[in-house]
Length: 146
Image 1 (cartoon, rainbow, N blue to C red):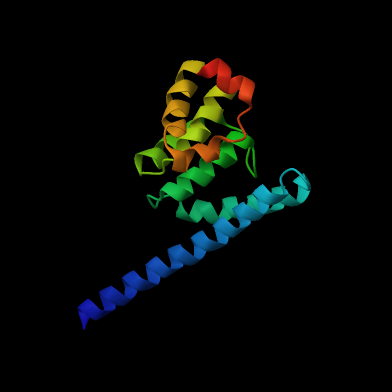
Image 2 (cartoon, rainbow, N blue to C red):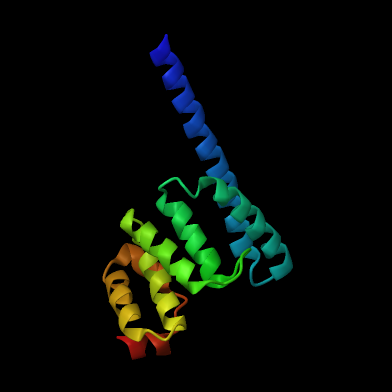
């Protein structure tokens, strides 16, 4: 009976994480889609996403860290903070989220650290499945860094 209760409790906790994560992810995606066309509405979605993500921060999830990194890097729903963005991107990378290489490269470009950006861009561009996440980095910057 005790094993059943432990198993049931574990399933409830996992489902709560999945449900909260799904809601946060949906809000985050709504925000990214509206960011350029309706920044005020996007900000509302990012703030909702951030509130939900705060509940998940202590879970080692590469996707949660990826979203937090992007939010801090761009000032989406939070005050822009490159140091925190870098920390979250590196955590996501450590947990296996390879597309973070493009985000870290963008961050280092903004911070004027081309050598660090180059390292991550080279990795991303040498892996076809990741390279498309770097599409928004302008060609001139790519030429300078390569």
